[in-house]
Length: 287
Image (cartoon, rainbow, N blue to C red; front, side):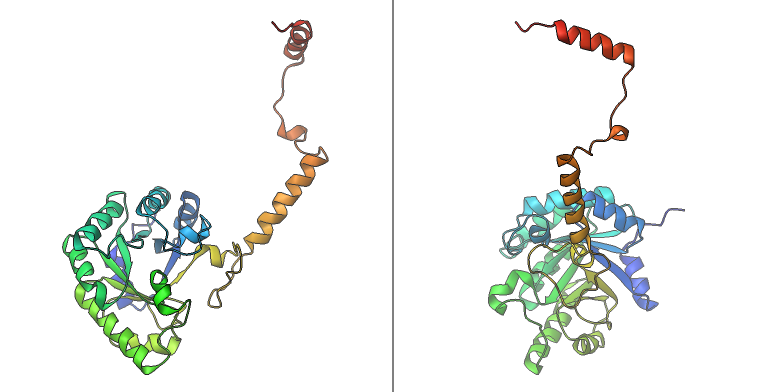
């Protein structure tokens, strides 16, 4: 029996029952399909795809068109997951109109909700999008679109002033209408304190166990690393980087020593038909 589509009520009920949800990134049709088959609850079509799929140095240069392309692929591959489309840099910061228009583009192609980064400074955007009928997930803590302000990839909430700002932002985005909040790169003890104050689902990426569910970048947990990316908080469930590289090396060797394609990889032809072709070919003269 096929699983029923996960929706916001499903996520709220899981929180009420203290059932953890699973949350992965997906940027293409195959990953979405496999996640759906594994009954993952939620998929994020993240702007991190700019780095994992397109080799960009950060998420800042990811465009709305690129996000829509990835989102279309994921939506086609996932039948029952709850799909969240990331709002890329400058797709919502300038005005409520931009925010609603771009969020609407993601919903129109099949996303169930959108995610945007920021706290009190984006509450007006969250309210505007939410009031237009589009569910919004807020993203706090380490927010990659603000790395230049943060001074790089740094753990957040490690002192009182940082925690005060994090708590203020959490409660503000909740009041603005966010249906859930994602916190990134904060100590587990700090997320536990935030959890005491929030009513909507709180999800974490590198934020410990005291949350309603875990988000992991699929490329990280599959060991699909390119470059020096190797997050401390990720458990590696596979090592596809080595597997893929070794497969390519084996293919190269087989082609060079003529062991591929072997007979089982070739299409058969009737002997009489082949003789006719060979006879014609040997007598054929180019004009």
